[in-house]
Image (cartoon, rainbow, N blue to C red; front, side, top):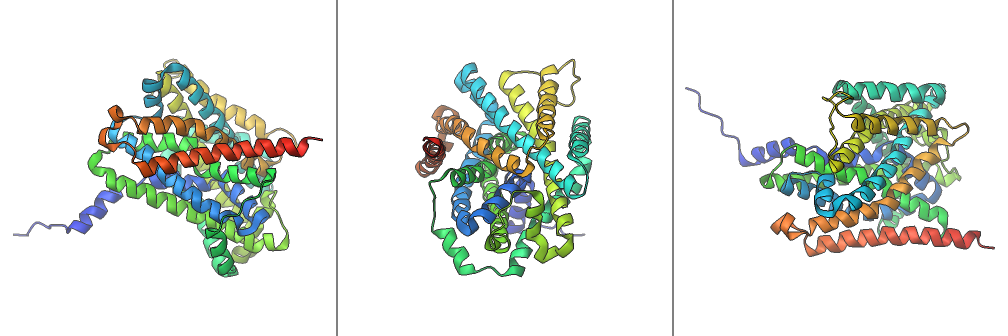
Length: 418
């Protein structure tokens, strides 16, 4: 008679982690979507290695904020929008949802801009590619067949690893890279401050907070799973921002040193030339297209779910339009308006991706204040409320973003004052 196999403790822990793995890694990897690639490419090509210290600080902030969201999901079993409505009432919820929709509309515009930019690299007009892609993605999502194409898009998005290979090939001055990472440098001029806000906004996103908490709650994770959820959040944020840092390093080492500041997709594709040669355009286009389609499949839907959850409207792809008109109308509105903006004649696609993330950062403090109030509520969180060091880091990030936004307004006013 065969003896029953008894798995060692370490193997059981790995198995539990793999079962919990997902929300943290997916949320952080989404930082490297079309606007993320645009933001890091423009930062690295314009300011060299300067932004590595900012990415390091933002990584710490992302881990703290996403851990808070995941912990609230584990403890309460509810999404962020649900808790905001229950604890703060309709007026505050309406303001928070308006901020979320505006921020996510900007990011959705950026995803469609990424599709249009990648199509133009293949010689296809944005006026054809953008509406067709938006229509096909909408059909796939609304019919529930998106899961079948998700793996293909994930493979295309893995082209982000090519930036790591490029850096290894070009051999940047690692002493300068290390110094720039640990010694922050800040410039009080509008373009630099905009770039800082864009970097924050593409890393710590309002939709990412909602997605993280909703994913953890939907998975039915309990307190006993918390240590593995925390590991997922930490690993996901670290991995996503390692890729971000390598995009900055590769653009700084290949474009900044020659005075090429990225303003178009063609210029951004040049960074992969050491790895792919003449195929750099194809590799960059495939990655940009995959990342854009992947994010476009998730972002408008997650926005719609959050809004309907907050105000108690019927929601879900299993319902007909007549049963959930608000759900389907908001989804169609976000997609439709985004396509129309991208199709404006002469509008620059790469700067759109970059600026959309600036708006994310401007709206982010509104959400962070609400999340911090919720996570410090003892009646809601009990012994799992925030610890002192978590509050210091999270409130510090909120104040920092607010001050940077204020600095942008002041310097812009000062610059244009006669």
